[in-house]
Length: 317
Image 1 (spheres, rainbow, N blue to C red):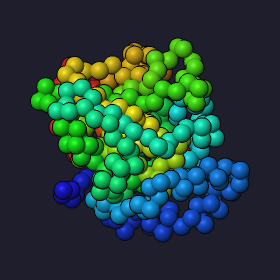
Image 2 (cartoon, helix red, strand yellow; image 1 turned 180 degrees about the vertical axis):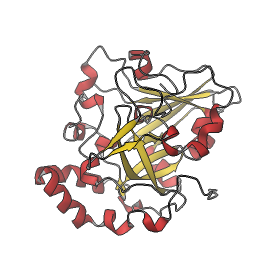
Image 3 (spheres, rainbow, N blue to C red; image 1 turned 90 degrees about the vertical axis):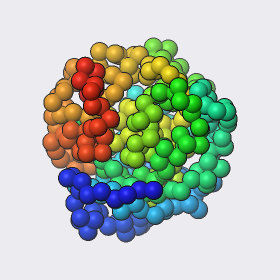
């Protein structure tokens, strides 16, 4: 059960972007046409045809509010990192190759019983809610979006990990015939990421199934992705097919590829630069406004205690 706690970064809900603004489909489509042209609109609308579309929009959790305007859907839907489909930000069209339904995920490793779950059935089993979160990319751009999903803690409870499990390793799909980026042999496919059990069960950590009041579109990581809003975006793995509970800290995709630039923890910190650029400020998508980067992306009151006594760890790379 979520208990609302007033945080230092919160503003009154009355100052958040009204629900009617981002749920009004005509307004969003008109804005998209002006920004990117009518040819992109079907890519956004595709999510409305998903098997779970009757579950959206989900009720908003009023405990999560923003200190900035929501990013326009048309902007967020057409500026994405999804290396499985290309290294540019314009991968929305290519990502429509993703065969997101039907989909299943495996629960493996140090659990009471390994199992395979149908994602549609999983989504219908969970209590969905919408949360307004800031999202910060390690590349120093940012957005603010309304994610829909359920706490990852609920999935961990369903998995029933053993006491020896200290981490959860997540893995995305591997289908090079469908995802041309996976034919690039210098990447350590499939994409993997990991969290401690404590991080995975923190109340902020979310399994995302929707965005902007609809099922999640392919380019955002359909049908199931992770959001850990106090970490850089590469930690929020997309299109997950497996959750593996393990005792030893796993090696994640970017950490394996470039350990000098991307660490396991990847918590947001304005005072710890990336080796090739500053993290002191961030650029908001859609407006190009420069904002000061917030420690833990502004969620420190929720998560800073997770890292007490870990001063020797590389927490912010």
